[in-house]
Length: 263
Image (cartoon, rainbow, N blue to C red; front, side, top):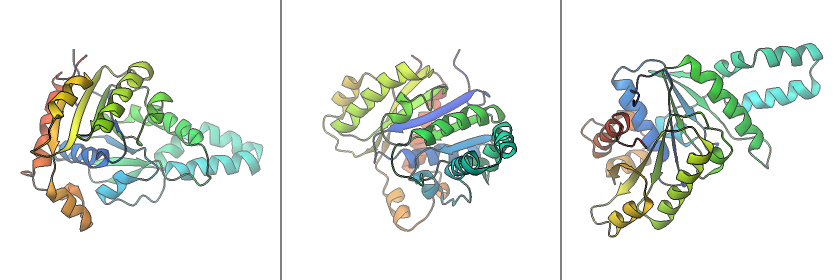
């Protein structure tokens, strides 16, 4: 049976190559759920660039990177008792890192303070997803661009995955690689494709969709209103209900949660 959007174990992630509009779509999904009265929603901005926070107009005072830095500091210079206390209170500190907003809680990954591999940050993010998810009805994750958070099992426990692409061959190639990685490294049973920023004249799009062999959840048209509001620094949260992108996201969620992409 396909679960509903209100199932406590509902964990949905959005992935795709950079520049496909994942953050804007994640924000629109959040908007849809909150306006329909969904309770206990956890939103995770898993991209170090914090694009989702920007789209929503939120400025977190704490990030997961702040907590990771504290762990490093206490682990390296703290007294044994401090280190022990931090281990046993990690879940508490994860909740402290949340930013409360209207209708949801937000966890931002933040930008690592040291250069180099993102592995330590992703390891803590995986722990956060596993730990915090138990306290929320639904979890919505805006992943960083590319394959890493999928292949490293950072989002291994998700139920559903939306692969976002734009109407380009490179975007579709990345989408196919993401589907393969998700099948191998996640427990997602429902995996669907969303084509974003579709223009009326998109030659060859039907062929790209067919060749991708990923169940299509829907297409989101190029929405000039989103582009204009972004330039003006306005949040998509306040887009009118009749906006093309808003209506498209409603249809996508209907397909996703009615089993439209069940594998």
